[in-house]
Amino acid sequence: MIRQRRAAALEPAASPLEDQQIALALIGRLKSLHQAVVQQLQQDPEASHSQITHWSIDSDRLLHARNMLANVDLG
Image 1 (tube, rainbow, N blue to C red):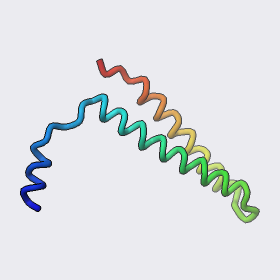
Image 2 (image 1 turned 45 degrees about the vertical axis):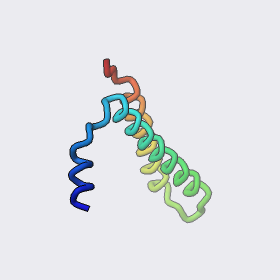
Image 3 (image 1 turned 90 degrees about the vertical axis):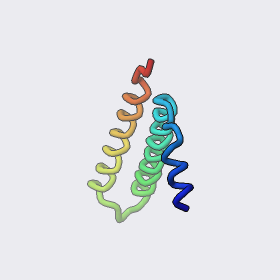
C-alpha cells in the first residue's frame, strides 16, 4: 500500500490539456445534475420558487465556468 502511494506520487502529473479536459468533464456532469434538479423542482408542486431560482443560478454559473475554461489558451 505504501509502495503504491509512493509510485503514484512519482508519476508525472497530467498535462495542462488533460487537466482542462478533466475539469470540463466534471463541470459538465455538475451542470447536468443541476439541470435535472431544476426539472424535478419545476414538476414538484411543493417546491419553492426560491429553490428553483437558486439551482438555476448555480446551473448558469457552471455554464459560464465551463465556457471560460474551454476558452483558456494552453499553448
